[in-house]
Length: 396
Ligand SMILES: *Cc1c(COP(=O)(O)O)cnc(C)c1O
Image (tube, rainbow, N blue to C red; front, side):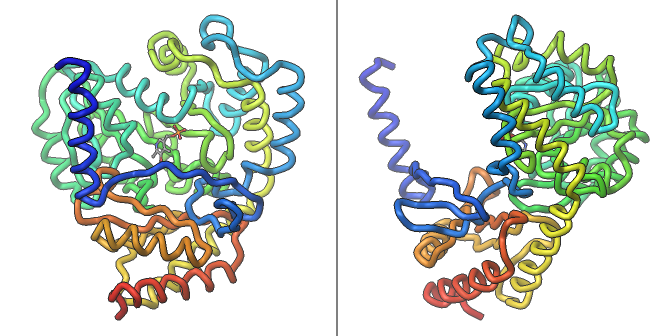
């Protein structure tokens, strides 16, 4: 292909994306305190943020970051392996290990980099990875990059996983990989059942607590804590970009695991370390997560309240889940975009999620709550949703 053909080919592809109602445009928003944001000059209630514990703009995180920013500057200047590690990186890793109750922890530039790097490093070509159908793109990409055999299962039909595990009798290792809380459904993975299967078939269980950390468990360590299976999970991956309100990925585990990852994972070795100011902010956030459990409690109460409100509307499809991610499946991508746009007109920013992020025919609104939202925000939202659905011929 000559370089002049490239734009033409892309134009054709873009046209197809548009015709399928799947074109994604770029918009800018200004985050505001209190679970709000500004779009141009209008204030919207922001139901599309993963800042579940309202920490991204917490004055304690901001001042921790500002102090280090003034002292050490903006960028880390090198990968952690070369010379990008500061005392703040060490301190955050120690604090993460203490928080997670593990011997050690390791930072990554992002959760995406952690998932991609860890899975592609631990799984080899002769191995088999069992991957949930709803897993996050970063886990799926890690599976692909590893070159291992790759089997997709459904967490709501584990007999298939069991059969596949039983059939896999080769020399290679077996890995079961799953989100702990599925990001577009808010549904929890059946971690105890997966632990049983992992034990029975000598597989290693790798979980991604991106939406679990800070939100689930009495002490906020995630779904594995809540379900009492932390010690049975081989590798626990998390992100600092969601409930922790910052940026960065991490793995918590034994000293051996962490030393091995430090030596082997390419997304860690060949990428610049996190800015030290971000590490300082994340240290402050972990402290808050441990000392202010009321944030989690309030978040769960708000989530239950909105779910009950949605459930009172039997024409709506709301998956059976718990926690701050609440999808309303409208199926059709154009309808989903229209309702999201109506909601924006009436003052609410809600994610409109379409394929390929979710399976065909399951386009949805993805409402995500933070502990900064108010009950009356939820009431007003339900009214606005009713109005939009009625206008689009979708009422009961
Ligand atoms: C957001 C997300 C990630 C990626 O984390 P980042 O830190 O934003 O790169 C990984 N896994 C899941 C399930 C996520 O939702």
